[in-house]
Length: 61
Image (cartoon, rainbow, N blue to C red; front, side, top):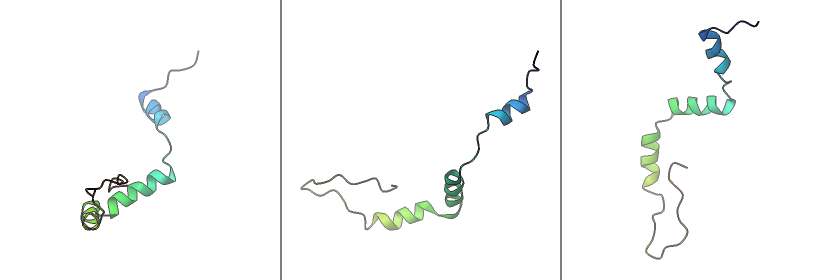
């Protein structure tokens, strides 16, 4: 009969590997002041006009 894994073993088994993309995004969040950067961009970002037109993308994208 196989032994039942202990709780620390289960925690390690459930933990997934951190991808390069996730690691990069975590480092960028730590380094870049996103609030200030979005504030600088928002002044120059196109606004929706009275004629309509193509809907704009969210600023964060």
